[in-house]
Length: 197
Image 1 (tube, helix red, strand yellow):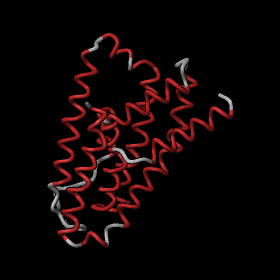
Image 2: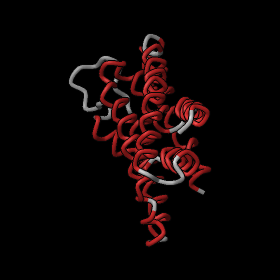
Image 3: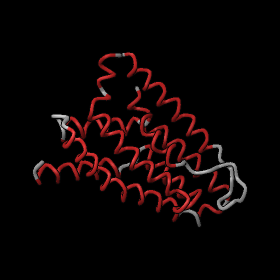
């Protein structure tokens, strides 16, 4: 892969990683509710989980949709159902920031990694990256695309988490926190609604 292609891929990774989507909105919400440190497993799961997903998609996972066309529609339904569930959990969270012995917790590394497989934006990013920047689907090219995406994605998701953490002072008020969580839940649903139609 030449330097021009690497630069174009890095720019694509930056634009697709920094713009709002389910991962970034959930990380901002996590940063606001739990802080940056407690959200670290979540944000690392997003980056590493996406890179693993991208590489597996590049190495042939998408061929399953060719063999089983109905599986793509099933995936869309599962994606939307899970995102609605997550939106409900975010909107209904009434736990004050910093509360001890709370049942609410940030996503774990594994949860965030697995979430990539039901995230419509992650699918779009992975398919676009592989088809444009590794059309041969060779292992070396696919792994390189994944590595570049991971390097660019990590600071992007960190920035969304930090923005959320900065909001913590403002969100100490229960009414503001409640309104914020509801707003984030609505944005989460809106961020994928049109791609699911």
